[in-house]
Every structure is written in C-alpha cells, then in structure tokens.
Length: 335
Image (cartoon, rainbow, N blue to C red; front, side):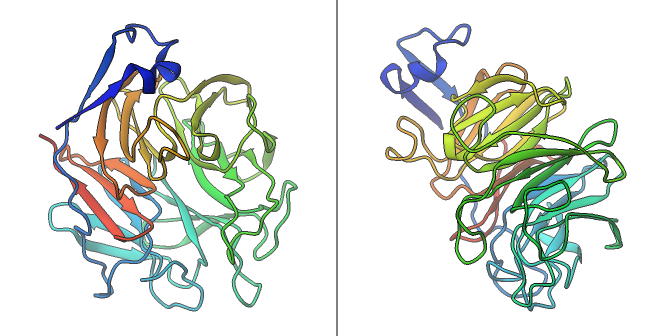
C-alpha cells in the first residue's frame, strides 16, 4: 500500500527539505495492514489502555497495560509487560501496585525499565513520579515527589515520557495535555534533565508555539548525535534540541507525534494518533517514517486507529501501543 500526498497538502511542511519539490510526493508503506488487538493481556482480561512500547538492548519488547482500564489506581495487576512478539503472549509482568497512570516507557542500555506516572492516586499518596525498575521489578530509582504536583526540581506536573542517553543522563518530558480527572488544566510544560543518580541539572521550555515552547510534550527520543527529539504534540511538530536544551529545528512533516522509535539505521518512527483535517490539515493518522538526522520523510503506514507508542522488533515487524479503542497492541507485518 502507498499513500499519496498532494503538493497542496504537504508543500508547506516539506518546502525546506532537499529533493521534495515534485508536484506529487509518494511515500512508500513498508508494512502490511494493521492487526489490531493482536496480543493477549496476561490477566486474561481485555487489554487496557496502552500508551508505551519499547525495545531493550537484547531485542526484548516491553509495553504497558493500564490494568485492563485507563488507570491502575486500586488495581493489583502488574501493568509493565515483557511481550513475546512471536506469540503475542506475556513473558512476565512487573510493577503491580506501583503506578496510577503509567504513561511513558523507556528501556535503557542495561535493560532497566523506566516508567512515568502521570496522575495522582485517589488517596493522594502515589503518582507523579518517574520510576526506574530492574527487569525483575525491583525499584532502583524514583524521581519526583509521590502524589505531589509542582514545577520545581523535585516535583512534576504530569510526566509524559523519559529517556536516558549514552552517559546515563535522564531526560523527562513534563506537561501532559489536560485530561480530567487525571491531569488538571494549566500544567507547566518543560523538558527536565537529571544526572544518572537523579540529581537535577537543568530544564527548558514553557507553554507556547514558538521555538523551544511546548503544547503537550508527549514523547522523547535521542538520535545518533545525542540530540533530543521532543514530540510537541499540541503544536503538531517534532522539536530538536542539543542535550543542553538549545533549539536546533522544528519539523512539521512527520505528523502530529504521540510516540517515537529510532532504529539503529537512523530511521525515526513517529506515530500519529491525532491528525485530522481540523487538528493537523493535510496529515493522516498512522506512522510516519523519516530520517532522524534531517526529518526527511521516508515512508508512511496508514492506521486510523494508531496509538501512542511504536517500536520495531528484531523480527522486523512493527508494533504499536493503542491507548483508546481498540485498546491493546497492534502488529504491522513487514512486507
């Protein structure tokens, strides 16, 4: 399948890119049609909201099931799942009782799992933290103050995603879009940087639509040069920064990003769960594939039920985590 974009729709986003001046721009689709609700939840119940899916250093795939619902508050289910991509079944599940609204997911170079928790528990004693877990589920590090919202160095407003770089430094996107009752309006929006031990180093960003400003910074990735890619979802763009927070570029040509995956060849997979003619004219829901260094588009995988997480497994197939109906894990077979 191929997707055809007319110049009228894409030229404003692609005008600055080399080799994109044709009257029609055709992006190839390297995957088959989406297979929604492909995986089975370990609880035996229907899969809940799944906002993240990531690949570890040995090719292992981890994902989120919000406890069969859209929240884990009060649940005894383990929401962080290692997934067997051959069978769609769970290998193991960890994190029971630790999270309220598990949202962002990252697996570091040592195979440890990082999770952002974007909401406060009903009793006010849990949530709004970034938690580092061993593959067996041992808590190794916590950032933020449990159950307390704030915009200083020791609190989060609503953390959406986390990544670590080759030095072990930690980057957190903070400031989810308002979603009652989990996330109140008026959130600050910023990117925070910590050292490998959790010491706060710096932050950048504020609400807005200019360079270095954000409207729902929803996901993070790091390219081969160590630059920080931010899914500035509310502004329908990817913003690129140095590790110190200096603005480098803003890309509109890779959709309205909700989640990222960067592969070893430098391809950026940007999953778009929200584009419509009203929210982002000229773009469709699906997965945009581009060059992580330049933003140049390479492909597009259409999916009107695209979710908020995307990854490519060692088998070459792509997997998406879907946070709204149809909840669960989507498989896209490579052609």
